Image (cartoon, rainbow over all chains, first blue to last red; front, side, top):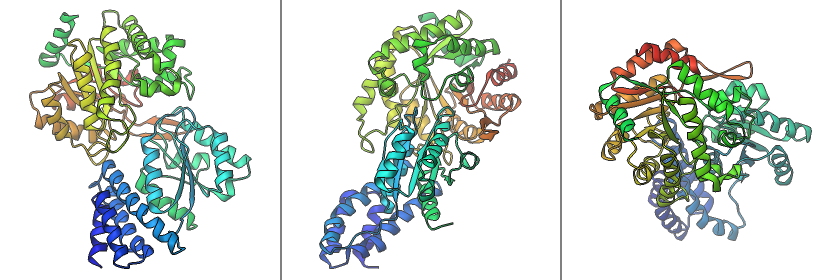
Length: 215
Length: 294
């Protein structure tokens, strides 16, 4: 691989936004196509970050800094893509939030960050979000993925209520619903009619990709 | 007050082991706390169930109970519209705990995490975190708690901010501090038990350890590493009652009272001098722990 691309990938893996920004500029100056930069350096870099998180080498701070490096690189690439009338492939549109009555945000925000870094368009509704707002946002954004976070045994019931509201609005068919949060799990996902449960932000990305691919 | 502090410090050094309480949130839920109402809100509107939970743990044999202030900082109270009533909420919680405890148990002022990433990962600065914790620590100290009890921390800097606040505003009250080791033997922020022990040793808190966590095995492993790093320090351990699973739409934690008793003995062998339980626990778990450690 081109040396600059290699260094760029490394800057993502090591979570160095300033280096990433500088190296992206160098790749463009070297005449490498922006989409090539994304496919050959940035995406593989994030994949490696995810793998390291999975096996316990990386933790939350590493995910956050890697995503920041990714974001810094994309900020330089966006105008370059626009100028070529190209765009990064949008993998899907996600509406995500922590359910009504629950204010836990770190896990949910991390999932939003990782999905965004992976190429999804993400609408993060924040915390304490009522069912009606989820429904409205799905309608307005045309989302095909909904992510629901609940960290209390008291609030996980709202995940079910939100899925029901989405059904009642006639939107269930067009979206995949993924849930997360400590007291929830794969059995709870099944119980409430969600499509999947993700244990962490990295798993969320691979599960959402898998769901949209139709499996 | 000074006498109680000396009692506690003496007890964690010389024994007997202090049995601390179990879960509050799930007990309140069983008593009718609905989704969306914070336990801290109930302190002001409907304190009787909270008092009942405290009493239940004391009846079960707890020597120390935690005030219902886990989410009692202004950052956590904001959504419930109580951000400007931090002092009142914390004071009320301590009053209720004291009412239940009488002279049968110590009252610890519970300080939980802020639920926000600190800068540079997030927007909350270290100084702001110290300010927020100071407000709570001061209120708990002035309300007369016997211990300032910092728990369920994942981030070392946030832990430092809480300890700094407790020391600054805490009127000399003993400080306990525990972290939650729930991912590959470390906290979800990647803090190793040995690292935590070293940091807390240099911060000179009275006792430190592990709470919450993922599995009892993982918490035991973390405690062992802390003990190895700091063999002279009295350790604190308040693990979840095993792992949660779904039983007919209800979240049930899988550790029996006997399991918790067995682990309690092992924890004491690893230097624990304060032992209780966290998520999913009930008075029966505490009773078994108290019995086992008699």
